[in-house]
Structures are given as structure tokens and as C-alpha cells.
Image (cartoon, rainbow, N blue to C red):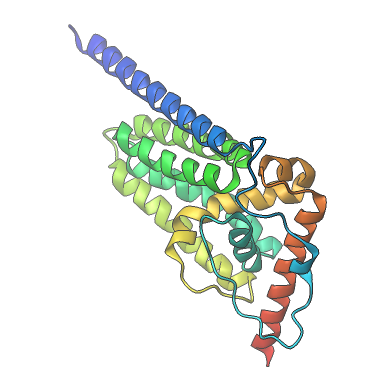
Amino acid sequence: MDSRSKGNTRGTSRKGNIIQTLRGALFLAGVVVAAHLPGPMSTPLLPPATKNHSKPRVGLEVLPPPFPPLQTRPALIFHLVYHSSRGIKANHWLLLPAFIYGALVSVSGSVWGLGAISAVQGGYAIIISKGLGVLFCAFVVAPCYVAAVATNEATAGVIDERLLGFCFALTALLLQVAGHKTFEKLQPSPNLLHGFLAAPALEFVVLCLECAPSFAAKLLLLGWGMEDVEELFVEAASIRTALEAKLTK
């Protein structure tokens, strides 16, 4: 078998592995979504928001919100409090997918590495945001996956993909930190789980809730309506305003 035939065989095998990994990821996504679909006797994992959430907390000190990674509404409140300006939104819309891409490039020599990072990012998004998580997989994770594989093939023998991906991801991360320092008054305490895992999915959910609130709320499968979405943003804004006021005292 000549070198050209060997190359074609290797390329075909690699494409087959990639297709199998993508099929597995889609199957996992379907299983997770199906497991969270509300049945006749089931209730949402979290109760819908109520008007009490947005009432002013008279006489109480407003503390920085916690970050429970598996609770949709509190996680979104945390994210919204520290990501409010247009500057930081634009920064993260560009650099969060860039971070995922860099991480995937760093392991693009291994189908299992690609599958693991994609499954972790996509799986978390589906768990925290249900139907919106599936869209996140389709419009963020999958394109980053394909781009990472293409980058690996284009740079084979030219540069180490691990070094390239690490430098790309690190640059994206540092630019995000610089964006927080530049555009946001409030600086969150370091939270590795939010920064490395949750932020991409939560930023995508916020974008969907801002652009198509009614449609996005239905895909969350929490029984939310337009009023619940509005109260989410109102509560986050009230907490942010109170915390910013404390900084000026």
C-alpha cells in the first residue's frame, strides 16, 4: 500500500471516529433532555420565579449572590450580577467560544479528549438549561469541535497542537479577566467552576433570554413565562445596584 493510500485510510478512520463521537454526544444530549421533560405528575426542578423575588430588601444587607452550579435561577442571577455591561457581553460572546476552541485544539490529537471536553461542556449546558443547552451544543460546541479538528489537520507537522491550543485558551482567558477589570464595577470572587465550566453556557442562556425571552423561557423547561424572565433581570439588577452602592460608601 503506497503512502497516498495509507493517508486516505488514516483520514477515513479519523473521520469515522469523529462521526461516532458526535453521534454519541447527540445520543447523550437526547437522553438528558428526555430525562428532564416534565411528565403529568412531575414538577419543575426549580419553582418558577414569583414577584417576591424582586421586592426590595428593606433593612437587610445585600450580600454577593452565591453560585450553585446546578440550580438554574440562582446560577443565572450570579452571572447577571457580574456581567451587565455591553462591553463585557461583547467580550464574552467572542472569547468564551474562543476558550472552548482553544481547549479542544489542545486535545485535538485525541478523539477521546475531544469527546470528553465536548461532553462536559455540552452536558453541563443541557443539565442547567435543558432545551437551550441543546442549542448551545449545536451553535457553540459543535462548531468549536469541527474547527479544532480542522486546525489539527491544517497544522499537523508544523506546530504542536497542544501548545497552540493552550496558548489560545490562555489568551482568551486573560482577555476575559481584562474585560472584567475594564467594563465591570463589580469584580466576583474567583470561582473556577463558573469560569471554566459554567460561564459559556450561562452567557448563551442570557443571550437567548434577551433576544427571544418567550421562546427561550419555554426551552428552559422550568414553567417560566415572560414575567419570570423579567423578574430574573430585575432581581439581578437590584442586587448589582445595591452592591455597587456599597462600593461607593
